[in-house]
Length: 312
Image (cartoon, rainbow, N blue to C red; front, side):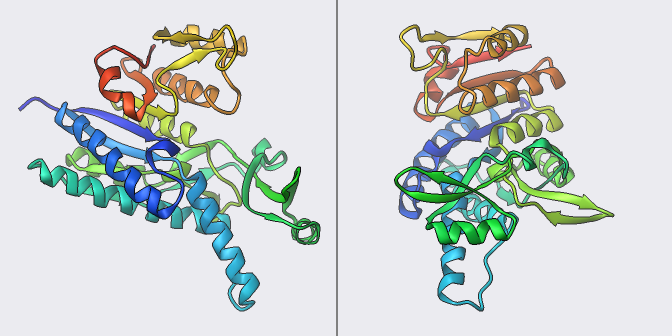
């Protein structure tokens, strides 16, 4: 039997939905695409975003504390862990059902994954990720007194912001690798992983989130997979996206990608992190291949009709 190609598939928000009901429906559609990849000869390692989900959990736990003072608010690391379990459950449940309907009994497993970060990462001094509910000025002042950062959102109130440090080490990588080597489908590093700081051998949850694109590149690098597929909201990468001179890019290599980043050709907060993750992976695995496209376009992208391919 021909050995399957190992691929890390990074799912974006469009593959998951934004509420519990919409997520359930979206994941059924996503599972069909993932099952198609299995039938095409790929062994999957799946990672996913969690922005709406972790924000929903954070809001719920905060409101619970407001209504019932004896219930404490949940730290961001705990909210991240909850979102990994919640999203992972929906994906593995739906994908397993889809595979069984096609006669494939491969196990699908979710691993709660911790990722270490540097406590002195510059991101902790310049938090940028908005999280949770909109607050009144009084609530915002209380958050500041606790040592948290807030930012005013015009017309809506104030919102907490947290750091997005770079990932250092995927702490459960050996467990992930063991399952991959056993031929199983693994869901790991959801939402960028649960951010933790290593202190004298112990792990302490960090008040932060990790960029899902950065962890996808690291996961693909650490596992030395054959391919990295990043699913986003557009069918391919564009130079000068959203401008009059927007131009689709079908192929590029690492050097070209770095030159385009230097020229500011990609959006700082949307496409550029995906390109940077691709570069990190390809420098670690020069024989690898990156495909960036959207969920609905995977079939066409695999056939070379759309999508952006990046190689070393």
